[in-house]
Length: 411
Ligand SMILES: [Fe+2]
Image (cartoon, rainbow, N blue to C red; front, side, top):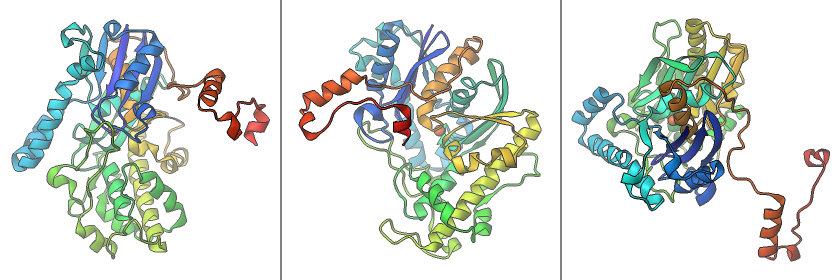
């Protein structure tokens, strides 16, 4: 049984192939088109996965797409009725996603009628949870996915037991820990898609002087019965028309529109930093306060999840799970004793998650695979590297292939 996972028309476009429950290949489109975080349709990634598996498209039984435009439909309709621009954006997304079988057939010069695979939609956060739990070494675990936004939710939690996941709750649009982090990242002058890691690093150089302000911007009550948190929306803009994202262009890095409102500057006591302006201690302190608030909410949600599930293991995914500084505190700040984070915790990992979701959650197959490394994309042999050097006549410039013992490499 061959399952192809495709993350398309979304940042970190990627593909993965799972054959009889074993991951054979997984790769991002950016590795082929050299465009960081490339969105669009991952035709080259799909071709690579099929080649690694030794299969043609006709031999694929299921195609899993980690997006379900029909998820949270009532909330979407509510926003669509209030905001026509929002409705137009959602309609465009829907058209793209319903066209995936045609896009797949076109990429392989096939008639769509000739595709025998069954197409499945897997909700964004369920694919994130599947990407972590189903390839983890755990027989049961608490599950948490947290990111900016996907299928109108930013956070989802539940439990995994053997080959099944059970969803216990979610935080819906517009409340989002990921967008909170992205908004303050932009405020600090880091405007590129995916810049959050720089601010996580910057946080180490500051003191969380403005922590009270951050606590007002994101509220979270660890004693309440609900696991979620809330954004004070006056500091944000995305709830007016949805976050402005450019996902459609395959040959461009995605961009994210401005997420913070002018109120953010008033609250934090100064206008936003311009990208070319010097970094001052004030900015380092704000990064620190942002990071501390993220940890308070993230670790607080994990403590609640531990109390609710009585599990000793937790599986994490979603872009927020890339925050290794917060993850590094899980053992000291929560009762969890084992942690598994999907190596591609961001949206690239959705292709893996969607494929395993079909294998276990839909088809009910038993677990038989653990993802214990991240080397599922293209590699190059010694001979291929040598051929490239010869073909480009780089030998004259001093390039050659040599083998080093491990101690030399480590040095
Ligand atoms: Fe995501």
